[in-house]
Length: 76
Image (cartoon, rainbow, N blue to C red):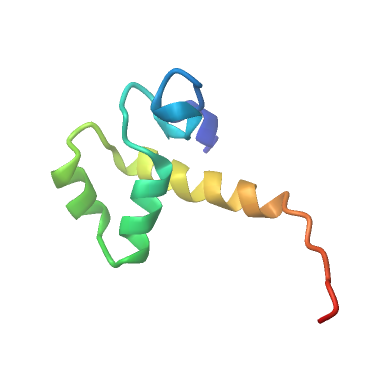
């Protein structure tokens, strides 16, 4: 699966935060809820525009985001 199929970044929508295409539902919100123990079923019930694939796309987006991080070791 390719997260770009489900997630868009547009400066005109939610100030450019990544959202589920066609919605104002941010990836950040969904990741936060998943991290707090929400199930996919609970997310889809609360946000009827979501599909299992759109939720998984958020996880793939997050993985891509941290994969490209540059880590600097700063001595204390």
